Image (cartoon, rainbow, N blue to C red):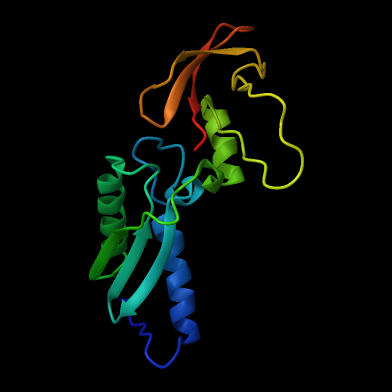
Length: 174
C-alpha cells in the first residue's frame, strides 16, 4: 500500500515509491500502438504521491481530443490499483503540448521495427535537414510517396515505398 506523504518535505521512501509507480504506469502499452509503452511514446508526464494511498498521474494526449486517453487512463488506474494503490486519479495535462520529439529513442526504434516509419526529429541546434523524405521501414529507401494524409489513426499517414512498393504507416511529426 502507498504510504508516502508530502508535508514538510519528501522522505527518500516517497521518492523511490514515486519512481517505481512512474515506471509501472509508464509500462502500460499504448492502446493504438501496443508496440510502444506510454513512457516510450512520451505521454506520461508525471506521477505524484498526494498522501497515504493517493496517487495522481499526469498524461498528455498526442493531440487534443485523442480518444485513446480514456483507455490509457483506465489501464493506468487498473494497474496501480492491482499494485495496492487505493486512490488513483489520472489527469490530462495539455501544456506543454505533446510533440513527436517526446518519443524516446527506444520508441522510435520499436516503431521502425514494427513497420511504422518513426517521425523525423526536429533539429534543435545545428543544420536543418535538406530533405523531407520519409525512410521506408521495410527496405530503408527514402523514395516514398504519400498515399493518404490519414491512416488507421489521425497521428499516422499512409505511405508507399517506390523501391519495394510496400505500403507503410508514417507517424506524423507534430
